[in-house]
Image: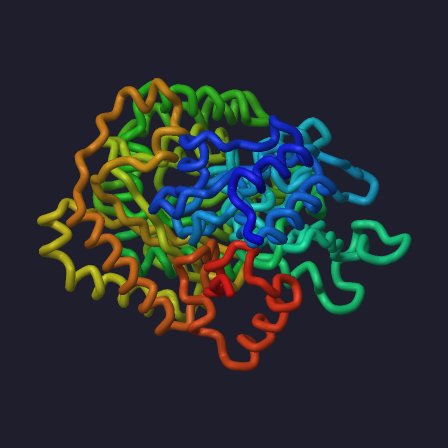
Length: 527
């Protein structure tokens, strides 16, 4: 006998309580849509507060034949939590954001999966401790569970890699309500201090887009916060030399983060910022320096540089060097300058990396462009030797669409990011005007949203962006590139060799035989 929406919702209300069940249509539409497209509107939303109640609810949901859709902070544009079927229940993990334990002696921290990167950063700061990788640009809202499911990168990534490289163990709720603990905590009398006693079971559940289970808790290793840090910025004449400079800095392991803005990104991220925002960042730079004189000098450079912080049409490389002492940081900066000089880079004011570090988890008004336009990104990870091929290949792709891009006022920007010593991350962002989706109205500050005008619907521009995304994904596949935040966008299964695909199939069939855990992610469909 089939279960109706009303019957399932009533069972979940009895189990979780009224406050943890959401059936309002506006909220259901919001949580079934990401920043690129809407999915099928879910039947209900559950907002559990602990693993036990989530496990029981998961068993009820899948037992009734409904899909489970885990959702973190929602800062996504690849369909990671957009349901394929209205017979689905979205799991909103924002009710699970406790920092469970900080163990300064063993240098670990354990948190619930709904915890944001910003809250962890702020909780650890008074203890002079930090996560090695410590968050994304969207870390004010982005969560640990979402980051581990989708390959979160940025702050600290040039030295420490992604979030996944720094997690020691997980707690996971499977489709049938089974709870699995990975890492050393998965052993009798074990604790979360070590990941690989035997096969790395933690790694199986990372970057899975929530297709293998719902992450409910994670343990990370900690580091002491660097005692000294400084920013450097350089300008290059073209994309190729800037990418070469980034790769060289990355290989040398000299920075905690390093990234390249193209001219369009620079204009959007700095020149379009309002005066008030610039002054707020300046104030944080002044107060965020360990040395008052250094702070004043840094602030003066920002003020004097004004809107000319990066030369016109330049590709700019920005980085943060950090270490245990000022002398150590100075030595790293000296080597950075030597490497860049060998490649024809010109040092420019370091305003951008200082401003980014001064407010690492800034407001999220940037989910819309300065004129109210929408945007969506795609990313590829390649070895340094393939960086020229992906840059040139993408430029050739855009060249074939140049006339249509201009006619439909679709613009494209690129960002290159360093990951550890061996990975070059290429990200392209498509910007276009179209009607806003529910998250565009929900995430920005109300006052900022009121200052923007929502564009009219533009199906032609949206269709062009969709076409470009498909061609870009094909380019990534041709180069054998890896990606993060796979969702329902990247052709994961299509590109797997046979043996690996069979292994993933077997794992999914064991954990979720009915295909009800986030169906569509990793290319798997509801059976």
